[in-house]
Amino acid sequence: MIEQIQEQIEIDLHQDSLQSVDDVQESEEQVVESGHAMVDYGLLSRGEMVERFRALLDSGEIDTVRGDLDAIRFHFYKKLKAEEDVKRTEFIEAGGVEDDFLFEDAQELEFKGVYNRYRELRNIHNEKLEAEKQKNLEEKLKIIEELKDLAKSSESISETFHQFRTLQNRWRSIGLVPQNEVKNLWDTYHHFVELFYDYIKLNKDLRDLDFKRNLAAKIELCEKTEALLIEPSVVGALKKLQTFHEQWREIGPVTQEMRVEIWERFRAASAQVNRKHQSYFDDIKDSENKNMEDKEALCARIEEILASTVTSTNQWMKLTQEIVEMKKLWSNIGYAPRKDNSRLSKQFHSACIKFFARKREYSNTKKEEQENNLQLKQDLCVQAEALKDNTEWKTTSEEFFSLQKKWEEIGEVPIKERDAIKKRFRKACNFFFDKRAKFFTSAEAEYEKNLIAKRELIEQINNFQQSDSPKDNFEQLKVFQRAWSEIGFVHIKHKQEIHDEFRAAIDRQFEALRTEDHGKRRQAFKNKKETPSHSGFGSIPRGKHSSERSNLTRQLQKLQNDLQVWENNIGFFSKSKNSAAMIEGVQKMIEKGRADVKKLQEKIKNIDSAED
Image (tube, rainbow, N blue to C red; front, side):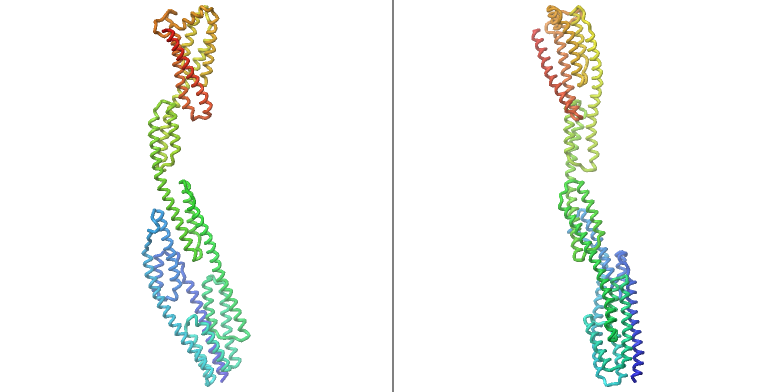
């Protein structure tokens, strides 16, 4: 009888072992198949995601497609959030207020409808699954109670063992139980299985066969667990490991000497998989912490920018470019830890909004200021255009210099008007100064011509040989003086020099006349006071100017003309290089000229008094 039971048990155990291995392989194939079914839903559009979600939901396999549905929901709202952020930024940069921003999306409403249907089906499925788990728990508790009764059975070993095998098959056929009952349930089950083995006192060969079958199954699980170390998906490997642990609990005991060894092998492999899983998420955590530091640095920088004082358009342009680059960097930085990511994102985007709001406020103020500046510069253009034809070179030059100084003191104008208004003002200024330059260029040529004429006259004076007739000599010297007065102006840099040469030459000739006797000199002086007639010296009608007075009058007129030119030259040289020394020299000539004018006026007055 024992041999028949042993043979039957060996067959049953072998079939059970094969069934257990098949169950493990089938479970692995389902996991692998599920893993291959996963799609990178981030590549789909939101519309495609909704259609994919609906198709998976209509398949009716809530439990098998749950991972896909959750992945679709994650990528759908990720893209929706990105689009909302873009719309919000565009709304605010267009001048809108953040609190007034409203984002509505038809695809989101459609997705919510499909997702609510999924939640309802999932809740129904979960309730059904929990009910089935509870029912399975009750069934397995009944089996444990029946195992207890087998230990008290008085039936034959063959019948008892057959009942035992039936109970084992029933146990394996029952599905999942509530998770919190799994360990206690399996510990109790194994306890009574071992009691049953002890109770029926199966022979050593029968127990060894069962132990051998259990050992083979556990070795296979160890090998599969060790293979998880090269699994590409860390998350998938952990899910398979959980399945392997459930299968381990279902396998019966092994020999006493192998229990510790096989368990340590399975536990060590499981620990390595867990460490790999933990390392994977530690790396993710480190990456998220690094991302958090980078995002905090960007937030700190933009807060620093907000706290700074910006006073020019160039500064705003540079800071705007920096903000744009920071936004690009932010988009390329990955997620921070969940508890910080939302806070940092809100802080960064809020700071960006504040920056662009301040920029718009500055732009509006700057625009108004530039419009005012444009009006001021237009007024200066009108003034410049009114002055450009004026030939009062000195005063007009000073007025133009004053306008140019005011122009520089006025700030920026709108960029679209900048070139036109500048061109208009410069045109009026250039017209006047070009005209003035032409005038003084012409005057320079006249000055050079007059200089040559005066030098020729000085040479004539120096070469003049006086005759024996003082009267003729005196008349000739007066001719020289009149000729000198009739020659126009020379350049300021030659005036004093040529004047001194003339005075020296004419004075030498008059000094020669003074060597004659006193009577002749008195006659010469009298002749100087008379206006010569065509026939020579003679008396002139009372009330007419004497020749001396005419000579003084011409000198006075010429000196007054010189003064006007010198005063004009002051305005001309006021903006040239090394102008200080030139201005000082001209100013001294003006002062001396004014003194000479007074002296000439006094002499003319004395002559008029003498004639009276």
